[in-house]
Length: 122
Image (cartoon, rainbow, N blue to C red):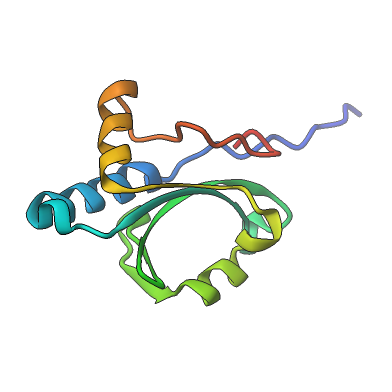
């Protein structure tokens, strides 16, 4: 009997695009007064992804996380979101203000990740 290797899940989400577009929509309206922060970070999977870490993107509005990935509209306190995703434990995040996010979107011609390297490669 042949042994099957567990296949690595493929990245299927739209988090980088969803977070980038949300920030763009909000910051184009607010201009220089935009105080949102785009975050690319490594998170711990839950449910069927338990035990895996992978790259993810969200937006910070002060101490509130906004996660628009996969059609959702999650808003929760940063402390809770980071605890649920193991974000602080991994310490692997990159934050971008509106100006830097805009520069990177134009420079790389994609939504990200731009600097994030994860342990799993996902």
